[in-house]
Image (cartoon, rainbow, N blue to C red; front, side, top):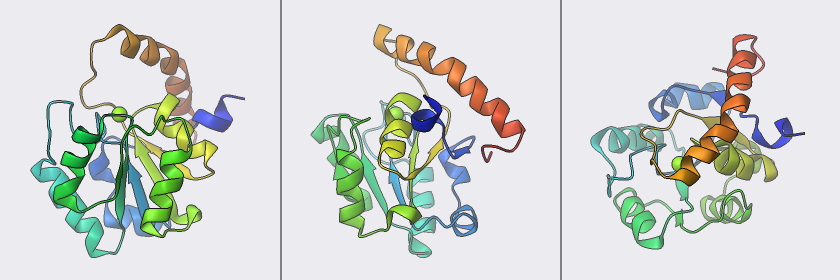
Length: 173
Ligand SMILES: [Mg+2]
């Protein structure tokens, strides 16, 4: 039952593995991204050089990016602005709302749109509830709050299971 909503389609080591080649191979035509811990740490207000380079490479093959975050508008808009990307703060993931708005803003087809995030309970669940594919990457640097530790503890057995399934080829890694 949880698998239906939390099992990612891909487990990768970092957002940098979502290369133009990876997108072409897997029919990825648009990307919805989480920001915090997926692309940068909470301490980076703006895109870092690797993020800028990665974004340019995807733009060159015509893969647009949008941001769906549960964080505050100021954080999300400040980050998205240099990339000129549509951004939706306070999305309430696992709500489907942000995903729906991002797909609309990019004019993409759900079948070619993939969600890239670091959390099963918010990012992957928002994607799966919306009927789109999901890529999960390990968090860059976790916050140390109690809520975060509890969320990670809940995710851990599922993540371990999906990593094992990846070894069997049921999840692409
Ligand atoms: Mg995150």
